[in-house]
Length: 114
Length: 111
Image (cartoon, rainbow over all chains, first blue to last red; front, side, top):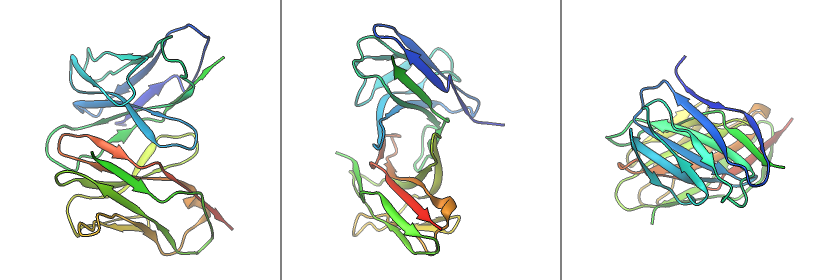
């Protein structure tokens, strides 16, 4: 089945640690996105990429890093510089070009700082 | 800038009640408009969309009409069910794929 796979579903991070969230898609989409969702709140864009080896900062990129070495993969690293990383992280993808493109989401990853 | 404002929740309704969740937008250019639904602990799923003025998106009994004159895309359903309990997000996207989401509205339907 085509879709977006995020892993792990649940992750615990100690203070000062970097952690990486995986996102893989087999939809052949050029664009991929990372959003952060805090309890009871909307989505905020962290990073996005419209083509391999290129990505742009979203609204809250500080303390995060990404790479896009393959079309199918867009991992997100939450660094120790992110002071309040506990949140629900959503990866998404879409085609590029035209208008009205639907963005498809993965099931999300819960990150908790312990 | 481009943004979406939607009705604050939470909204609590009895089964078979009529649902309206208001959504208005601000955008430069000609956005496409979306409603997404999020069930507990899951990602967002596309519920419906409309890509130009006066288009009506519909799915699973939900409807929304793209109103350019009022810059709105209100979500409606004539008779809600317990299984409709979820968080609903209004969103817009422009041709450069910049997608903006509203804050979400939590709906609880009681039997």
